[in-house]
Length: 128
Image (cartoon, rainbow, N blue to C red; front, side, top):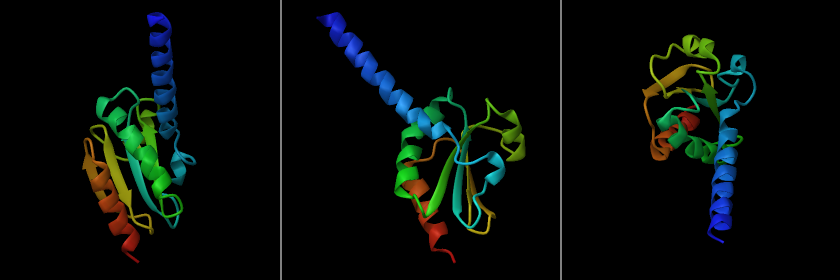
């Protein structure tokens, strides 16, 4: 009985982690970033990076909360190192926020809380 319970728990954990991994698929291609006429947040990191893993569920939530108002995108720079060079990052995770005109407004290195991300996105959405 204990073994079945352990298998069930591990299965649920695996399913949850797999579902959270959906954030790692970027919306569109990297060439479409920043998204035209849309406030865009790009998180550059790696699936194996601990702070990146911590941010994955936050990004997934924000992706839904800001649908139609802002784009929230993750790029794994270990899978595609050229993107790290393209965005000029030196450490992961790095978050870059773009205004609706595609201009970089803010850059942060390291874990970034949901509250700070929301604050930054909301400020950029308000700017006309």
